Length: 452
Image (cartoon, rainbow, N blue to C red; front, side, top):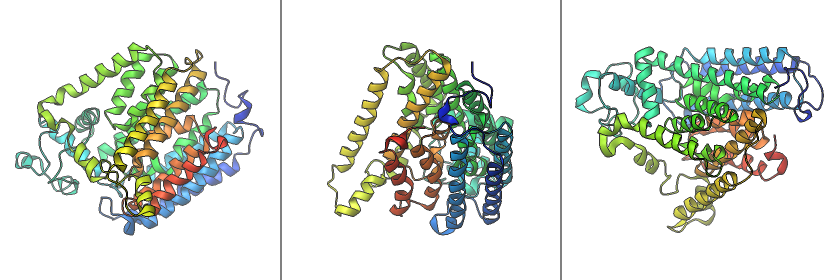
């Protein structure tokens, strides 16, 4: 049974006694003011990802928020916060989100594709079958959504089936851009609520939910831009909840659904599996089959734009991977096999981690201890895949943020805070990617950088 908030807890979370709430309140007010300043900069801008030239001012504000966020995280992690600290954390978190929720997505147009895919399904059409500009869908076009869809003439949808089912649900419950943003914000707030419960179960102060709730990335990318990664983050959090209770089948299904919202959360599956655990594997496989089944009528197009996207982002050739890009600027010309060798090395590293986890010690029986192990192992698996493939967009880190909240190692927190810099188009500015990926990678080389 978890100790009450403010009561006995492991000393490592509160070695210096109870803290005053004033510094935390001041940082919270500063973060809300910075969010309001960022809002003033983006109001009136057309939706989309405008690139480095037009977003530098916003990213500088987010970066300043990231510094304050790290200070606040250190504050709640190193001291035992008083009871009212949770109210301060939740009040500032809600205020930041309410500021950004009413506006059109300022830094990305992905939300318009979500709304479109839901509309297409509501009309009884498989979303993987046609590109938005196809004449077959002409009757569904309007002046509010269709003009803002990215790659409307060139690409079918990229989103996996669990995301598509969510878009269909949104079209029925809350149609339109505002409705979709509300649902994404609901997922974000639900993640905060579940994390509070998990923190208490682990015997830690609930105010440490700040590690997720005050991070600039989910504030801007979930409440501001309404990315589907908010749903992936919620599902990962629920998977931890199920895993802590040793509900292996449910945990396997939740990981599968998270993967089919955004493919990358598949990386954390080995954290939940132990040798000869057939129940988790069976639940995972059955869930994947059931989610893909309604869309198989699209045939080979059921993968949508995913292969084209991977090629366009340079993931297949390796030119879009930060470490390879950096190396190519040092040695001038990389051999043709460098991308394949890098992918093989990354797969070997992840495979080795998975085998060490799966065939290592059994998970603890106590829910709190079990949760700590699952979160720690899942967080490092997630961090390795993300740094390894180095995505070009900050919202790709959304599903890692709940894991970082439960495993607040300095390297992970810096990675979450720095991810906002990816708004500045790292595909064409390698120094941006260097600022995002190198500091947490260097921190992770030190034992204290890997420990909460």
